[in-house]
Amino acid sequence: MLIDTHCHVHFNAFKDDMDDVVRSTLADGVQMITVGTQRDTSANGIKLAERYDGVWATVGLHPSHIFAGYHDEGEVQFKSRNETFDPEYYGELLKHPKVVAVGEMGLDYHYEYENVSLDEMKAKESSAFEAGARLAIAHDLPVVIHCRDAHDDQAALIEKIWGPYDAAAPRGREAPLRGVIHCFTGTKRDAERYLALGFYISFTGVITYPPKKSDVAAGKELLTDVVSWVPMDRFLVETYSPYLAPVPKRGERCVPSFVKITAQKVADLKGVSFDDIAEASTANARRLFRRMG
Ligand SMILES: [Zn+2]
Ligand SMILES: [Zn+2]
Image (cartoon, rainbow, N blue to C red; front, side):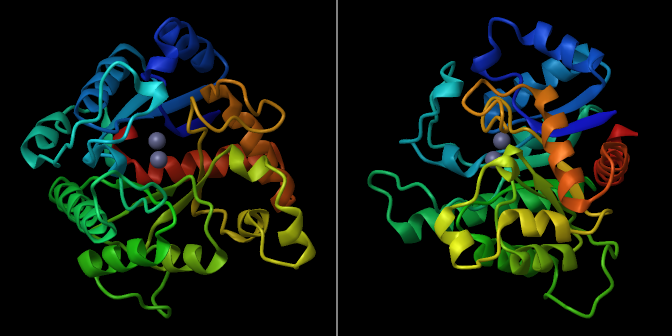
């Protein structure tokens, strides 16, 4: 059994066959957490989770949806609309027993938005994250962190909320703020900092993509090096469905059962069996997302 810990099966990309996809995924031995990104997707994810054993939801505000100019092709049923994180709204949603985390939320410096300065963007993303993190702490829930091109600031923000980075501290100590860095594509140094803070690292199909030839030629550290190095008790697997289908499905609509391909790649990189990865990643997910039971 595997758990796809980050998918969006309730997004528009599945509007015609959502229930078929969920049923066949579950029949295939893959359970899933469908992740909210703003008010509507957070509420809709819960509705889907209510209908199936083996499906859970998260509620939160993705950094891109803080800004008016963002539009996601996969989410055409609504427009992003300058949303400000509302702790009351999300605080009500997360009372639902199938909500296992707050997020996705975090810092994304990859995009630029019209009429928004870099400083304003950073300030808004960081205050939305902090509000989400405080809500998660108040309800003893983990956070799902979306971080792109911003690992230093993201780790510093967690430290600000949680306490300073301490390289000598034992790993996995109980922290008031716990969570996962989803779709991790950072460096070993980034990962080390998150692990020391008690966080988990989650891998998508990106780990199956061939690295840049120039990086290989330069002897640079690759994402696959991070995968082989990360401790067995601190990683998760996910699809990010409908995005980022792994090789050899790259370019297709990504469905949660493709998490098997990513798990196999983790197994190959670590030199262990598929079953070892399935067992470890499932145990890790259940340890982090306690409401899964
Ligand atoms: Zn994300
Ligand atoms: Zn996502």
